[in-house]
Length: 440
Ligand SMILES: Cc1cc2nc3c(=O)[nH]c(=O)nc-3n(C[C@H](O)[C@H](O)[C@H](O)COP(=O)(O)OP(=O)(O)OC[C@H]3O[C@@H](n4cnc5c(N)ncnc54)[C@H](O)[C@@H]3O)c2cc1C
Image (tube, rainbow, N blue to C red; front, side):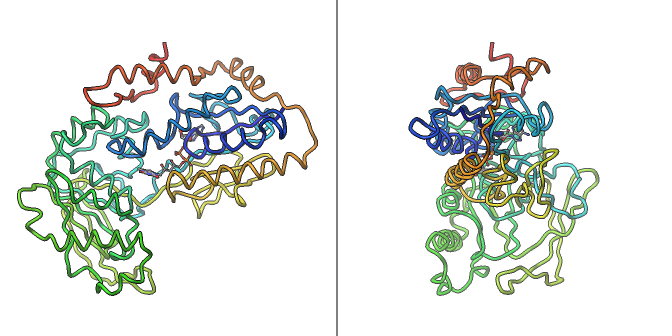
C-alpha cells in the first residue's frame, strides 16, 4: 500500500490525485490511498475563489474533480493548514509522498510608495472579496468614487474590469456573493483604466475574455487608434494573440458611437508604469511614467503624469506562500524544485511549482508528471510501511483538529444551494465558522 498526501485541493491537487489513482491502480502497485488536505473547509481552490463568478461554465470543471474525490481511495481532509496545524515533516513521516499543491495565493507587491494606502488592493484580495474567500470577505472596497485603475493587462485584469462594470442584472446566473453584488449595485465607478507596461501586441488577454468587454450593458471599452501598431505587424503574432489584438482594433474602430449611452468606460492605457500612489489615507492619484518598447521589454522614458483615481487593483501576479522547512525560490516566488521534485518524497505541482501561469488545464500534465516522479522515487526507495491516513487521524485527534470530510463539504454545498438567490447556483458561506456550522 502506498500513501500519498496532497496539500491543496485546487486543480493541481485533484489532477495529481487522478494521476495517482491511475498510476498505482489495480494491475500496477496494487493499492494507493490519497489524502487531499486543504486549509479551508471547502475544496477546489481558485475554481471556487478565483475564476470569475459570471463564468460558471469554467467553474463546472469541479464536477470532474468530484469524481476523483468520491473514489474510495481518496479522502478530502479540509480545515487543516499544513505548516500551521501539521508540519510538512510530520506529513513526510506518515506518507510515502507529499505533494504540495498550495497554489500562489499571495499578491505580488507593486513595490511603489503609497502601496499601503486605503482602497489599494491586490487582485488576490479583490477577487477573493467578490468570490467570498473567507480571508478577504471583509475587504469592503470603497466604490463611491468615479475612477478605478487596474494595473496589469492579463485575464485577471479583465475579470476585475468586467466585474466592476457589470449591472446587477448581468450577474444573474452567477455565484457572486451577496455582499459584493450589493456593493457593486451601489458603485459610482464610471471610468476604469486598465494600465499596461507594454503595448497592444504584448497584452496577456485571451480573445474570448477580451471580446466580452464589447458586450456589456452599461460599459464599453475605449482603445485609441493611435496606440495600435501598424496592421501589417499583426501578421507576426501567433493566431490567438492576433485575435485578441483584433478585438482591440474593433474597439478602436467602434469609436465614440459604441460608448454612446454607456455610462461606464473601460479605458486601455498602454506603455505606462506606476511610480507612486498618493492620497490622505485613501488613494487619490497614481503617478505613471510612460514607457517605450525596446526588444520586447518596456523601458522608462522619464515622462511622467498623474492620474486621479479612487480605487486601485493591481493584477500583476502572485507568489506561493512559503511553508516552514520547505526550500523556497525567492526570486521565482514558488517552492524551489526541479521539474516538481523538491526532495525525494516531497514534490510540488501547479502554481506552487511553476508560478501563476497557464489555464486550469495546464495543471493536468503537471499532476501526471509529478506522479511519474513519485513512482520512480518509490520504486528506488526501500519499502517501509508508512501509517498514512490512520496515522494522520491519530495526530488530528491528539491535536483536536476539526477535520472536514468530503461528505461534510457536500452538506455545506447543499446549504449553499438552498440559500441561493433566484437564478443563482449557490450563495457561498464567506466565513469558516459558518461553513463548519453548515456541516451540521
Ligand atoms: C482571478 C483568477 C481567475 C482565473 N480564471 C481562470 C479561468 O477563467 N480559466 C482558467 O483556465 N484559469 C483561470 N485561472 C487560473 C486557475 O485558477 C489556476 O491555473 C489554478 O487554480 C491553479 O491551480 P492550483 O491547484 O495550483 O492552485 P489553487 O487553485 O490556488 O489551489 C491551491 C489550494 O491549496 C490550498 N492551500 C494553500 N496553502 C495551504 C496550506 N498551507 N495547507 C493546506 N491547504 C493549502 C488553498 O486553500 C487552495 O484550495 C484564474 C486564476 C485567477 C487568480
